Image (tube, rainbow, N blue to C red; front, side, top):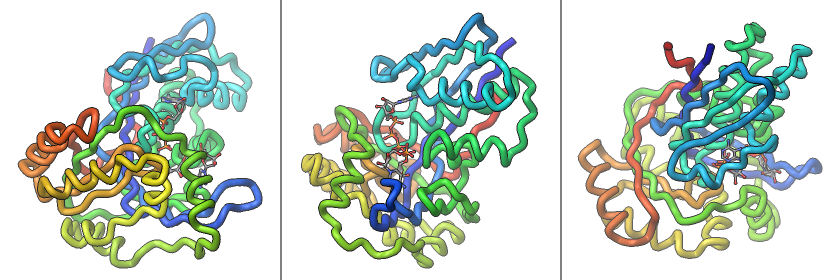
Length: 297
Ligand SMILES: C[C@](O)(CO)[C@H](O)COP(=O)(O)OP(=O)(O)OC[C@H]1O[C@@H](n2ccc(N)nc2=O)[C@H](O)[C@@H]1O
Ligand SMILES: Nc1ncnc2c1ncn2[C@@H]1O[C@H](COP(=O)(O)OP(=O)(O)OP(=O)(O)O)[C@@H](O)[C@H]1O
């Protein structure tokens, strides 16, 4: 018997970052939006815990116990006093180390798949608790849609969304380390103010107003990502020159996200980005997208 779960990537439409806390994390006002790029995690009973991965970036994914999918299985099994004997297969479509929460998606996906496979019957609150232990972005991968993350991003308030948003993602060569980007933020921002969500941005999401959302996109980690990877400025310029309403570094980068008017604009901006030679590839996607869901057999 197998259980397959589909889990979306995310883009941060606002990422307000406060000063470093004593525990090394940063308080955030993190407005997450799930987008229609998905990983699939399949859990199958096995003799022992094993992870495999397929997809264009599969060679960059660790297959040992550091994989967030493996860690999710171990945490759930430990909580219920069972052996984490499961084969987790990841069909990876979300760019790796791209600031789109790909590893987090696999953690949330494995958790939901193992819960169903083992019949543990964990409550939603317990699953969210395990997600928060796995990583700051993991609870949102379970929930999907749109949400404001506070604390280190793990405390979620779901947000209403009034329409469909069209995106183009320019995938860069190589990844950026999330801790390195936060450390660069600390170096560049000696006195960061307390983070707060922008009322204008929340209104734009609620009313589905693409132009207003384009004007409100904001990522406090963008200067740090650009400092570590200056060539991202060329990608941002190429996307806006091609007709995107706005461009932004996605989370800790190096993927850049472009908000566009409609599906046709998405196709032409993606083609122009690839032709510009400033990215490895470009993907189109829409919001909203649902959180982690079991795929019917
Ligand atoms: C950049 C974002 O993707 C935006 O959603 C997240 O804030 C990062 O979330 P994540 O990858 O799930 O991060 P975690 O696995 O929890 O933490 C990895 C590292 O990122 C830094 N980190 C992460 C979240 C946070 N609020 N403050 C931080 O400083 C810390 O150095 C931490 O050791
Ligand atoms: N299932 C997984 N898929 C991809 N990377 C994983 C996974 N589990 C652990 N990792 C490790 O996590 C690192 C970050 O990968 P990931 O794709 O999650 O980055 P990200 O999208 O930038 O994350 P975030 O947006 O949450 O900061 C990888 O370099 C890899 O070593």
